[in-house]
Length: 539
Image: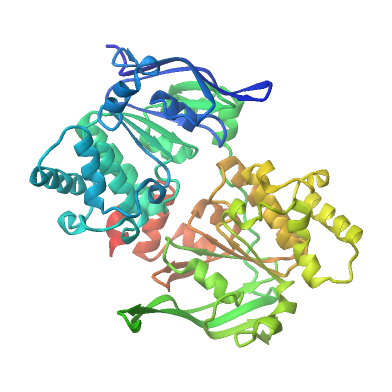
């Protein structure tokens, strides 16, 4: 039987002045009905461009060559009118971030209805019934009540379910999923993957699944194509690729998971920061007079200690209060409760009184591209804290310190006059860490510093952080929903949910023997253990 999709010598070339850059270079693969092919590789490998090429949704300036035969018809030589009839009906796509894919001004009913209407469905009653059926199929609770909801009124997992409902609206034969779970918590991710497998089986769809997460590939895919620098370097059944990888790049990807052990728990180490009964409550205001009608308990009575040379991991899903807790401990938002930094009570200190302590209390954020000013050079970014805290330094002295900081991060000091957009994601995160470390802090809050990075880069950043901690005796508060990274770094962990502590203690003990159902569900989702994730999370 001939494959549903047969891609032959597909190439995507961008012309840059007098140079040509082959982003996708003569790749070929096939995909049959009812099977899943995973396109795997790091950022920049050409995975997403490959998917966009199949339906000719490339950015301006891209030159496309080769063939993409869908049921024997070459999509690359089709007219635009023919492609429009195929897109959204026979071939559909779901992207990484549902919030940017959905229109914030339109209700869920209108957005799903639009794709039905474009492909021939008429009649408001008939369309509404089909929309409710689709929402029910993708697991949206009370679908009839959700029709008038806007995207911002749904959780991340619900928004992605709506995107899947839109993709399924016209019963497609080929379903393309471009990193559909990367932006989701591990428990929601597990639910979405189970949903996709069930829907594929029910509708006998072919699925092209694009990801850099090999754990997902192992659970979902039948076949794998590994991409590097625009080329497919290895293909095969998922069992063969995982058990006997042949290409060095595939072997590197499989070995890229963060490894190593955190420093052993030392309860006798010097306490850098303690917090007692921390609360952060945000008022809910409604009505014309904006009266307070309730409160959101983002952090609700949490106590902790962070010690020299140790990492305290704060884990939990989005909305659990992790980042709010970190900001409260740094005195970047107001809170209730006692905070002691090196024995000094700081919860009541104002902006000016806190400034001298900022040198010793630093933060590294999740998205280095968003946290680094695009208008400043790397030298200016890293030196910013020195200018504020060390006014006696000359220009040359600051550059010498910046050069040392960049060298410590594994970056070339000669690049300090370049700008953030000229670096890769991993390099930008190293710059963000250099900015924090240049002031030689004692306490650092790391807020999801690896979640936006490829797995191989994640492993490098984990090693870097572990080395810095060992050399300088740093106290880390590591905030993450990525439990594999937390296991490699943290000596102690606190599991948070709805602003409260669900479980806390020595990391090794909790990872080996979690006590609460919620912690068990998180671990099951993160480490691909068979468990009923949905029940524990919804309780």
